[in-house]
Length: 175
Image (cartoon, rainbow, N blue to C red):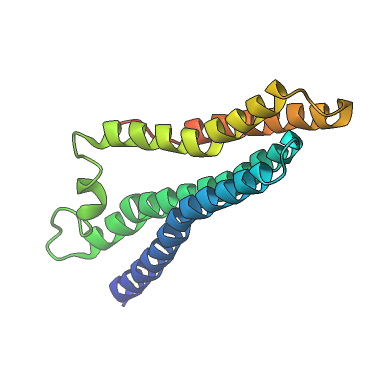
């Protein structure tokens, strides 16, 4: 009975993980679409570079949502590897290896760290470099007043915090 309950729990957390992966991956497209919309809107209003100040908050909100979902996806994987698998393995008669071997096997790929580094680069480029580029363009056109300049500095700080968090959660270590 306990084994069946653990399998049901596994199925439920894997379903949540699948849903979060789909949502997380769609956030990349949503971010690109929002950036394109903001840039298009800005280009349609010549002489209004302050409209680029819309890009950093959009990137930070979508980037933070991406990061939170990515962390939950990883947490589910850790839970399966560290909690469910050992409990189910202990119930097996006779106990053999891991029940959910794939949960560990796919993390032991020798190219995993290089893939994670590339993903970190993509995440930083999309969620941090693009908004910083928009801020740079805004500043190069001459800030439109002290209030908007202060807003641009606050946005820079938000992007920096997001970049630090993305880097912190990148999970670049080997299993």
